[in-house]
Length: 176
Image (cartoon, rainbow, N blue to C red; front, side, top):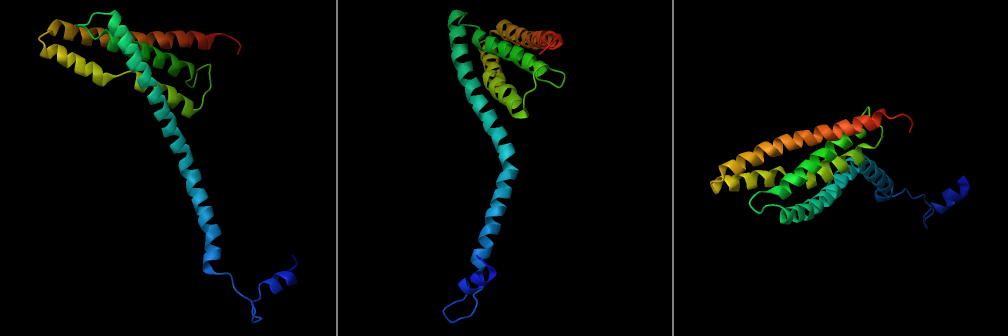
């Protein structure tokens, strides 16, 4: 449209030019403001959704793995919780080293949070460990409670160290 056609189109029946209504000029500004707000929260929101999805995966894995291991082991000792916490400690030590600043694999912050905070956080459980230890104390099984604490802490630290050590070796391997 030419400028003259635009002016003619903007005239009312009375022949005067009409100004755009206030609502019409505000609408594009509102859309732009909404887009700007969405761009601002999209990154953090996607990070939280990644952690939530990882937590769901880790929680389901923990419940099923712990139940299977507990059936295999002694019913009087929380072997299932010990197992998932040791495995989770190994995984987080391995993954943190492999994907860290000096690591071999470069992954996004979102992927690291999905695995480390989401999956490992959902898979391991300090609260269940605490509750099971407390129940052993309540049942006057102090030796079992002490063994649970000692074995757990040592095994978690050893598993994190082992995961870190293996990933460090992988990081030093030449080539891609």
